[in-house]
Length: 442
Image 1: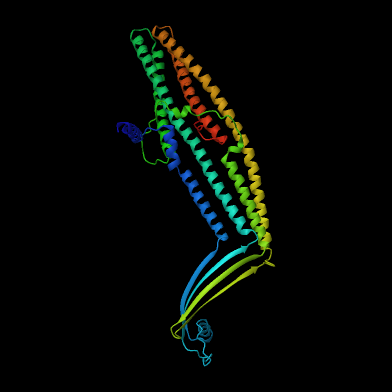
Image 2: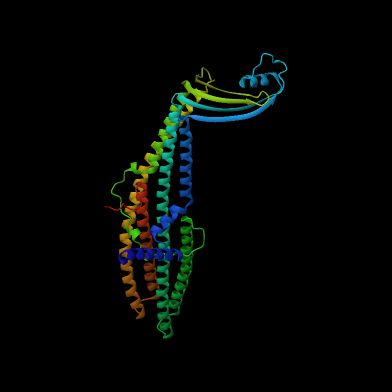
């Protein structure tokens, strides 16, 4: 029995830990993506458009099914024509009846009708195919919206990390400059440092504290924007894990074929829908053939008679002249098809350019990350040597300030490069029409 309890307890523990993390405001990238797909308004709108497209498909498919209707009513009249018609329907005719003065005649009428379209010139089939293509386009639009949202969540997530890394770099610079200021104060008290050098360091520390305040406010702002993107309107503290394996799972795509983009497939579906609409418009020149059957029951209390009957048949309708309405509908459908085809061609060109831009942006970001990483290592070593020389009085305060500024700038550039490298990789995968993460291999 214990062999079966252990996995359940472990699973329960994992769920509790995950729940506690969410309550505390800790977000991994996977959790952020799941929350955005659930709560973001753009994704919800895309799902509602799918529901609307499904309803349109249902309406279009109704034309290929039999139509059944029932009706009923009760009336009483002493007018000659309605009364005489009711008498005939009730089969209560009497040769002694005065046609001019039939008296008051009541009638309860019940009927049911079944009709079916035998031929509509292809309009029903074309409308149904167009609706199906529209539904497919809506589903592909939803996929595109989710891909765009995923890339936006990655950018926002990385912006939060980058803002906090920048804040940490500024805070480290403040601490380093404060330590140098303490050394300078001691040297000034011992008469080993000029007042101007001491004032330079004090001004530098004040400027860094101002930069620290700006960095703190920016970190709070991007955290708020991150929550809003996830559809979280409430105020909450955003905590990010020190290491997130999801970021490392972002991989460079092996191919960049534009045919994988859902936007392209959606536009192709819209072209098919436009073709079907043109086919439906041309069907207006064809005859319509319908079969029908109706059953009725009539009862009159005045006559104390009732009767039932049926009627069935086939009807053919053909528009001989409609003032050019059908021709206008054909021209409109043809123009809309041409527009859809041109939009498809424009989208194909735009996607090719977008993929190339994303590829170059990622290559640039990866190169800048390598350079900035080496620069930080060199700047840190230079800062350590300069601080030691300043403590011994072998370096002026202006030179120390320059070294510390270059170190802070290098750290800020590296944090930006790290965020841009991951963000550009997510954008490249979106531009290539690929999911954010590679599917796990069996």
